[in-house]
Length: 190
Image (cartoon, rainbow, N blue to C red; front, side, top):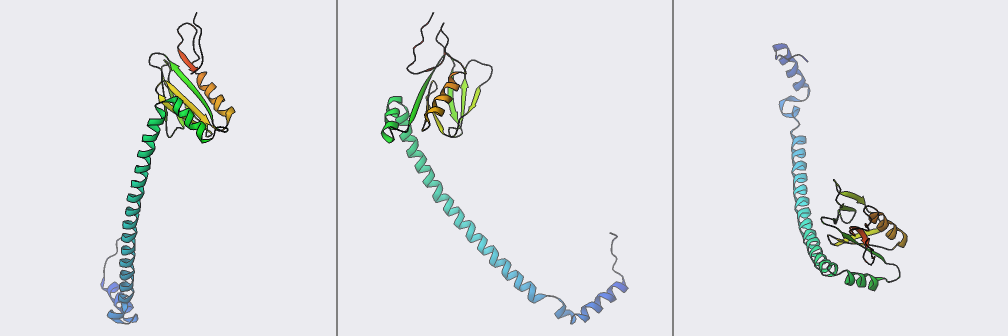
């Protein structure tokens, strides 16, 4: 678009249009501009009030979440420090439906950790990389210590199937007894 030059001819056309709209006072939409400015101020005030309310709610909810997380972490720490106590706790909740499976990881540097709210299981098993396993939704995994892993859920078959899949990543060897085994499993060494 070429640059517009303000010429006397263009100025004359502009003056005619302003006169046709009712003169200099009526040609500018002052009333509309004032109403728009008022509405804009109202909207800004409403937005500020909403931001304040949102910050207040987030602060209150954050305190509630932190308090619940702290109390749950203390409870779980006490409970998870002893696998037998945890198993008794699960049986006391629903002894019929809850299924548990414990695996023990034996070996120098062999560790397990659950991350992303118990949805991923990472295993260090003397490979050049960590073994990453995605945990099914019906199974929950807890790592009591780096070498004790608990699988729990209400579906017996899926809990035991996933535990067997984890165990198959590094089955126990018969020479040194290193590998992943069930807690009550006994390995006869050669």
